[in-house]
Length: 111
Image (cartoon, rainbow, N blue to C red; front, side):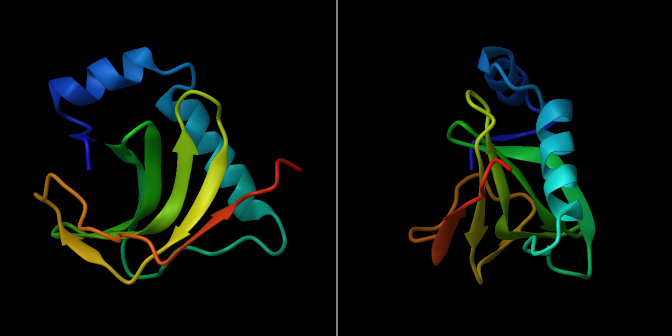
């Protein structure tokens, strides 16, 4: 996991992206409105691009102490959306993803 929202590294990474966090968030929110969209886990709040993994914003479910790795990932360069399945849960202060973080990656059709 690359950078948390408050970190200087996060801001620098966002500056290098064509797609900004608010636009990426809107892409995911629009996707969630579609019939057949993969729903996010219940029991927390919607994490709005809180973390960047490589060149991808993460949008998923988080609590004050935990982050569910499963969620929508938006490429900061292209806006491409993927849903990544995972049973992994991280403590909110973790800086790196575990190996084999995702069990399945599903590209989301553009329309």
